Image (cartoon, rainbow, N blue to C red; front, side, top):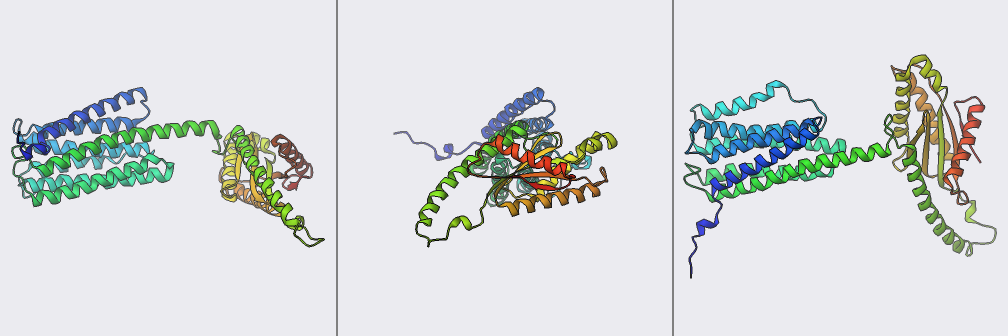
Length: 417
């Protein structure tokens, strides 16, 4: 029976470093190639360069004892820290923020000098590990903050995954410093430490995972932008005509099923009601379709220019989003024509929402520095009934109410029958 030395089952540090360096190099090369295909996406370039720097740094660490100590200690660790720094810079570019000031790049010089100049900081492996791990922890916190900003702004699911990964990396660096002081190692390569080897192996797994996460997050952003381009109006950011009609028709079908169920329940309830009473006497809550025109929009374009006209359209979209509820649907039909679908309203509520929108728009246009004049709206409203579930038919009736509002002098809300 063969006896196996238990120490052979532990991770050998030099091997783990060499493997991690090779994988980082391959990841960097792949990202550099992806950037060549999409040169406008500078964040991919920064991620690739970050992996390249980390790969060189890890390779130099693994060659400690074979190369000059200045290369294998201060230079190697500076490159590793710089690689993570470039990952953070890439995330800033991904989140459409400006690159950090040039002074921030001094982190490379600070790290190199702190490790190269003989001092209590660089005297022992424990001290050097503390410096490097502290810098990596600081960068991890900065990366997590950037990812949280991306999550709030773009709601990308992969950002949550990456936050979890970098939180693990942050915790690992803190644990690694603690373990190095508990189990001090004078020579990282000559006397391999199982603890250090294991933490490096975990870092390898995290390095691979977060690079995959970066690229998947970029793919998620691209997919989201393509979907937005297909469904959103490019100027105002609201649903375009096709997407609005599709969304409303789907909601109308759902409302139809709910109405049929409610009708059956009402019929059963009416059979038990006293003679002369009916649930039909209760207020009727349903859906409403609004068609909206900006009054004399062509004159705005002719008198103030198309920039002012575009500003007026964006202003309306912003005010409408602020005036509507989350379950309502807003779309642009084209030109200065918009449509709104209100869920679960009666005539009084629909009129109140339309009036609030009309007044807010008039006030907002006066206060806008690019417009500087009172712009008004004409609004037509039609209530959705169980008998009228054709979207085209509803739209025609809402348009008829809109034309009446414009014919009566504009700047008013008209309820159609």
